[in-house]
Length: 275
Image (cartoon, rainbow, N blue to C red; front, top):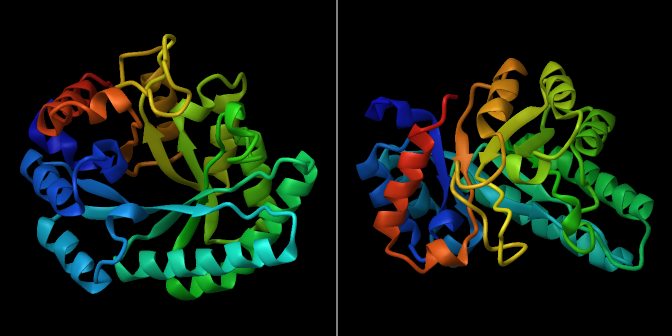
């Protein structure tokens, strides 16, 4: 692959967690990477108009702001507080020209899956007028079932599709992450369903290591584990998606190494992919 093939590569700032936003922008730009997904921790307390200018000056395209969601809660007050916080997140995305907020939808222990999903649906529905006015889309990210206790009751591509279809709004769709969905028997048909409905908003890649030492912070580089990334990427393309392939890796091991060396590893692993 040539350098221009990095034009559809996007990296999440959390992938290079030790770096500041400025360091991410500078190093991604120098590497010829096309996009950046910004996590809220790197813009906390910053002048968002200056952040907007910094991203524009880097030449990188802001792909998404991560993350919103966590709509569930036992009390109405908790749920309303989550809605209010998500409106702020949407405003932050608008301020930095990020077209999408990724939603980790939430789950509250002690509630049924059905209760959680209803609260998630209600929370997103309450946000949609604000999101539409801001010109910011919302991407429902289904998570692996191991996170269904406290992170999300949306634990499959089918569940995410049903939620997005039920809300039936141009500003809500699905964020696909291979780490969470690679195991699904009917993944291809659900991806095609999502694309057919115009709901496939974004796509995250990494790998699942069979010897992972941490259920959250030991993801692998593409090719380091057992996820058929190329096959899933082909299906995503078949579904009509032609946007960025976003590298989102949480890894204590990689965060501990020299981040420029790690960035080179990310690029090399990306270049090995067919799609």
